[in-house]
Length: 196
Image (cartoon, rainbow, N blue to C red; front, side):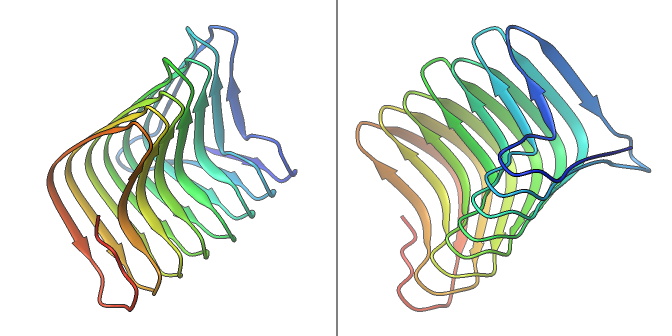
């Protein structure tokens, strides 16, 4: 199955107003979601009581300043077994989670970012993120693997971050945040790199 959206500032899948959405592929054929517009999340979950659950997905984002998954205003996302590919300048290809009571749980995900200024997982404004068995690869400069700020919480286990270009950061935590990570591997051989 393929879900595709080509407009700017529009999501391919949207859940809000206390709805529940489940998207599931299978072992032989991953479900594919593709968003090619600028400022466009492939999936958007908003408002308390809204839940999106996904399993066995291939996500492709190609626009500038796009997100693979945007969760806000108290929504919950549960993401398992996926492959994420993102291109485009300032691409938050993986996850942008923000707002009090916004939650994200995910495991067994492989992420590749091919645009400059990309960010892997972002938690801000009181969001709670729990990730496990995640690999984040970036090929362009000014990349941040994990970012948490403004009273947010990020918990992770078995994480690999591979920054292949200069001016990159593995983990960045700013302003009243909680970060707890077990078993992390951060790799870069390029100049001006900071692990944590």
